[in-house]
Image (cartoon, rainbow, N blue to C red; front, top):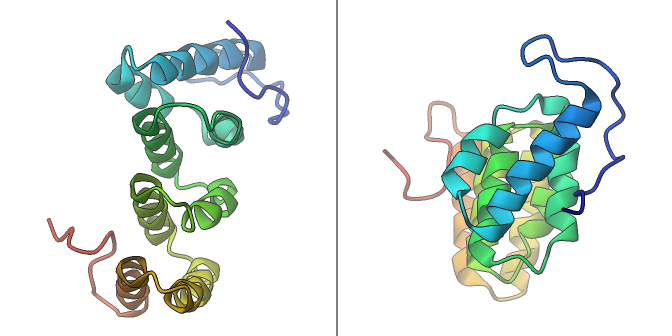
Length: 165
């Protein structure tokens, strides 16, 4: 099995919770990325990869970028895993994917940005909404505008539009 995007994270510590060295984390992440890529055990991969230390999120981001040929559902699951970590390292990827042509990706990216919800994210989303509206994508524009409104309004629901559960 070929490794996925190694070298992006530099860390030689052992994790006290799992007792894994960086090399073992690489193998662990590669194993579950392969499960995700093949669609053999996406739920197992999801729950295993959301438990990795956040310092390894960059590996997941790089794997997403380097595997544009994966099935859309595998890419969506990997993006959801990245979002679960709520890491600022994911923001550039999520910003880029807000403009993706696939609704399965831009909607998940928007949800991820809403979950992070920092002032920088709100500022980006406001600018992005204007650009999306200018391009004539009214559905996406309305989703982004609603998320911005939710983020700037105290006590409002944060998450994708229509997800009031």
